[in-house]
Image (cartoon, rainbow, N blue to C red; front, side):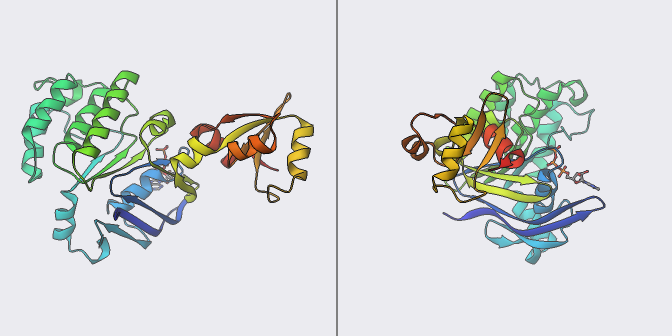
Amino acid sequence: MSDLLAIRDLCKSYDDFALQNVSFSVPEGCVVGFIGGNGAGKTTAIKAALGIVHADSGSVRLFGEETADMSSARFSQVKQHIGVVFDTCSFTSDSTVKDVGAIMASSYAAWDRQRFADLTEAWDLSAKKKVHDLSRGMGMKLSLACALSHEADLLILDEATAGLDPLAREDALDVLRDYLVERDGRGILMSSHITSDLEKIADYLVCIEDGRIVFSCEKDVITGLAGIAHCREADVAALLASGLFAPGALRAERRATETTVLVPDRFAFADAFPRVQTDPASIDDYLSLTLRGDVL
Ligand SMILES: Nc1ncnc2c1ncn2[C@@H]1O[C@H](COP(=O)(O)OP(=O)(O)OP(=O)(O)O)[C@@H](O)[C@H]1O
């Protein structure tokens, strides 16, 4: 399985923020969820990968080719195979949905008119509607329809489902799943604060905080294996004394009635501590305890 996008040691400094040695990749056939708090650096990393902002150092490979070695003509050619959606609809506000289709047709060699027509119809985007009359969610749907209508091999979606209502998000996730299985060799990088979407669709998760990658793993390491143990003080003492966990390896949140502990393997934990209630960890639990939990 090769990587459609591979970012290595990417650095970019602004006055009060720095991306620091950011590395991750999007393998073929996979959805990579890109998570992290507001201002963590997701959009900056994406823009640097696409050459929209100039990185200070590091490398980006698209479809196996180093972007630094590409001429601008080659870079433009490669970008024909990438569908990009940012969290705002960037089309000229006076254009109609039909005009947007025509502009895209002149920009992308592999523009698929029928697919664009099908998606805009399915998403109730009337051809005559002007961009400035679209709601935020409708604008996102138009951007998604464009990204999905030029035979892209790589989709880069930055908060692309943020403005959609729950049913429309469900629908969009189905369209993304279909897109991925329609042809081999496709992949999706999807930044989102809506972790329930990523629980449904992502294969891998990459988490960034303050410009650094905090963890990068298969989603199942979190939702399939990790757990939240609900411990009393005596349980905490027992698990620390057990020798099963290296000092400082666990993160916990102390509350008035219990201490919740993030455990890497809830099945092994339940075997060792059968009387402690242990639930599956959600991505939000994992994020919150990894980033904000007290070290045990
Ligand atoms: N052009 C710029 N000039 C100066 N600072 C910038 C610029 N672009 C982004 N930043 C800063 O970089 C940091 C990271 O911003 P970025 O948009 O990458 O975060 P994000 O993870 O996408 O956040 P969010 O989830 O809120 O969209 C922020 O502190 C932001 O203010």
